Image (cartoon, rainbow, N blue to C red):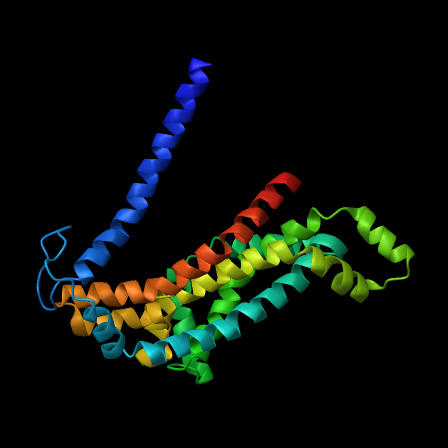
Amino acid sequence: MIVARREVWVGRTLLVLLMAVTILPFVSLFVTALHPAGTYPPGLQWPETPHWENFVSAFNVAKMGQLLWSSVLIEIAVVPVSLVIATFAGFALGHLRPWGARLVFVAFVLGLTLPREGVIVPLYYQMRDYGLLNTRWAIILPLIGLYMPFAVFWMRAHFVNMPEDISEAARIDGANTWQLFWRVHVPLSMPALSSLAILLFLWTWNQFLIAVVLVSDPLQRTMAGALGAFQGQWGTDIPLLCAGSLLILTPTLLVFLLFQRQFVSALLQGSLKG
């Protein structure tokens, strides 16, 4: 009994420490952003007069309204298309299992090992040859391709664990392959689809490398990619830079906080099935 209580307290202490380590950078950014613009704040010291206008200045200077619209356009193009392709591929590889499915799946798994840094140079020349360099398509198309290995792996894992009895019952009732997919498996896949959508949204919103290398116009990038141009212009103004960073991080934090229950439930559902 004493050992169990000790383990509980050790676990809680570690969780508190991890939470503090996670929250401390955000607190530091927030406190620094409230200092007078153009100054060098001395650590975590609350200013005598908080300068809330720094957030408004950063929003206007960085043209975050246009950046927000650009990020939304990229999200709308990347996330739904990736979900549709991954769902079709995952259903085929995990449920239908045609000839060569294992080989195709191994190819997708190998795609997970490719680092983004290793493919950025070929992507640059490919987008240049297609005439898509310095456009949003130079971000959208590579991201869809780079997300496919993980997205297909994720959806295949879901369809593999679906009970065969459900499909057999639908077949007996006269359902063809398309009806089996659309009316039976897709509704049951909503937890996996929603969690994958959250991951793709966060990864796309925070995309930096591809946006910076393939698109020179900051207003055509994602908000995280435009942070590089903002930093180059206002890198010496630490409070304004921190305010801009917080504005860029805020949407991803809100999305995760709003949908964290669905994300956690999907992960738990997958662990129980596996």
